Every structure is written in structure tokens, then in C-alpha cells.
Image 1 (cartoon, rainbow, N blue to C red):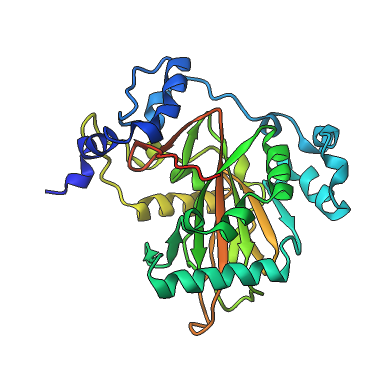
Image 2 (cartoon, rainbow, N blue to C red):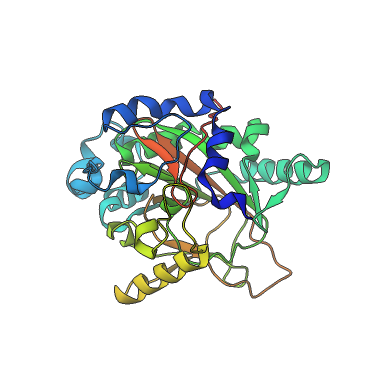
Length: 314
């Protein structure tokens, strides 16, 4: 018997995590949900509730974002990218972090791996290392970066998660919103940092400009709703197959990010992206991802239908 398929196992675990889950309670009340802080939750709970759009999902950033008081302080190259946020769903910041900052980050990860402070999960990911590192935490909370993220979201954001990679993930195309879901939808934003120069042989990041405008693909969209007591029976590969089908049906054009050390790519919660195939198996693709939530949304994990444990580190 696979207990991980039954919702009560997560609810029992969550029962002892009130401190990390209580943030959802006022929003359950706001949207009329009869939920306890430990309850199972998924997009099915919001089927009959309208999801308010974030500002630049409802109006064109090219027309309005320049009115933000922080816009004029941006470099001209960044201004152009920020203006296209509504259209493209991503922003590129070239040479954002200095070589010294990146080198310190890489040394920290190497040290943590050697000392056993962090381990690889899900084959290739080092999760939440920023919680143990002032260096990584300061990069994720860089004031210049937070200013841009808050501008794009038109609200304050908080650093939630870091993921470090040594090798290319080779992850198939997906949206972060299947893993870190919010209601209202779209209240997550991601930052990808190149920790070295990255070429086409080491599994660079790929993404689909404008794909964030497509409907969110959630459990219902690949027959993975499940029942009152049990999670759906579909696999993650079934979700990836559905995304691949959508990419083909919409004739989306892929871009590959051949980043230089210190470059940053910011993407929308629903932007489709993934990792290219690794050709040079001896090469590395050192990189780091930060995920941020806004303060005004219910946060949950769609596939496992459980609320997100928030353990913000300031």
C-alpha cells in the first residue's frame, strides 16, 4: 500500500506545522473556503472562484511599468527587458552579479557538499541551501533584485526557496505553477542565476517566450484530480506529456539561454521552461534558482494537494 497517495498522510504531518501554515488561514476565509490550516488543498477548491489577475497580467507593462518610481533607476538595457514583461514573461539581466559574488557562492556550495551539509535530491538538485548560507541568502535578497521583482509583480515578494545545480537538469518543459501553486494564480516569480559561462553542450536552460499567457495546466488538465481521500493516479511524466502537447499545438518557439557567469533570468510563474539535453557529460552547468512568493496569496503544491510550508529566512 502506497500511503503517499492518501491525503491523510500529509494532513497528519501538517497538523504539527501550524506555525508554517497559518499564513493561509485569512485567505481561506477571504475566498470562502472551509479549510483548516492542515487541510488538503488543490486547484479544485477554486473551480468556481474567479482568480484576480496581477497588474501586468491584466494591463500591458509596456504602457504602464515606466510609471513605477524605481523604473528610472534601471539600466537602459534592463528597462527594455522590463517593459516587455507582459508580452514575453521573462526579463534578462546581463552581468548582474559580480564574478566575486559568484565565486563565493560556488565555494560555499562546494564546501557544503564536502561537509555533508547539503545533499542532492531529485537526482540533481540541492534544495534550500540559502537557509544555511549568508552568502546565498544575501544574493537572493539583493536589494536591486528585489526592487525589480517587486516592480514586475507590483507588490512585495519574499524569498521562499533556493535550488542549486552542478549539472544540467535535463528537466522536460514545465511551469513552476504545477509545483509551487498559488491562488490567485501567478503570485510566484523565479530567478535563475548562471554560476559559470554556459554553452550548448552542458544542458542550458530553455524557455518559451509568451507561454505564460496560456491557461495554467493543473491536475484537472491531465486527469489527475483524484478523490476526496486519495491523490490522482497520473505520474509527473503524464503532466510533462501534456505540456509537450500544448507546446506543439500552440506552435511555441523555444529559446535557449546561453548565459554568461553572473547573468540572471527572471521568469513568470507560468512561463514554460526546462533543461536541454546534456551532450558533454564531463561538463558542468553550475546555476542557482530562487523562488519568491507574494504575501497576498494561498500557496500550495498542486500535485500533492498540500499547503506550502513557509519557512522564510530574513
